[in-house]
Amino acid sequence: MNIKLFASCIVAGTLMLPVVGYSAESEHASAKTFVKDSVITTKIKAELAEEKASSLVKISVDTTDKGAVVLSGHAATQAAVDRAVVIARAVKGVTSVENNIKVVADK
Image 1: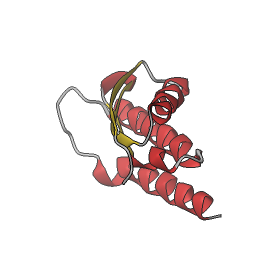
Image 2 (image 1 turned 90 degrees about the vertical axis):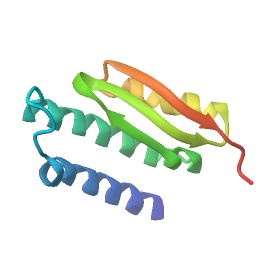
Image 3 (image 1 turned 30 degrees about the vertical axis):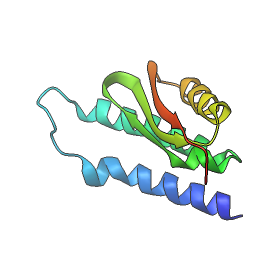
């Protein structure tokens, strides 16, 4: 139950980012591309939140221009890192995935 609530909060908060955070970062960035990239980020974060592995919640997702995704943060196992990459690649609109996730054993 808590996982569903947490995932819902993440999705709702992330969906508000394009509205609240939009500013003309560069003259070349279009609003349509910005919103599309935000939707990709939201979908990946929601999928990661739905996974049972708690270490996937510690992964940050950033979508750069035209669907290029950058994953960063840390996970407890290499299997969790691999799962995050698979999830990101499976989202529609993702053109590439850069994996900067570090494997760090929980203490």
